[in-house]
Length: 66
Image 1 (cartoon, rainbow, N blue to C red):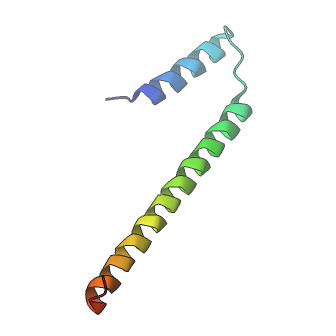
Image 2: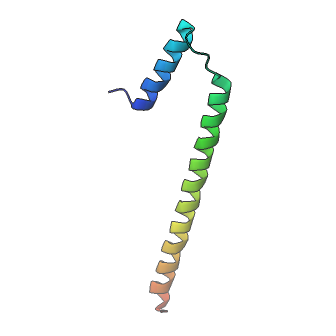
Image 3: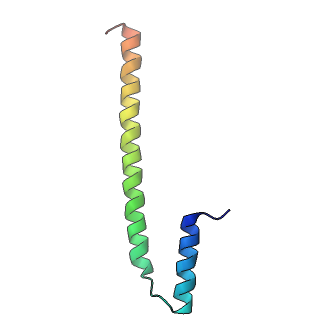
């Protein structure tokens, strides 16, 4: 099954091919890249924060500290 995003891009491509709309593909690519990098950065930050918490919990259990 084709995803909504792919269907959207295919639709834009078709309309652009027909000359009905003018798509600025380079701007669209740059915006998509920026969003992807932002999401990846947020995911990396969340994973690092989670791993630090997990490491702290393991150290507390191993040392018996409250």
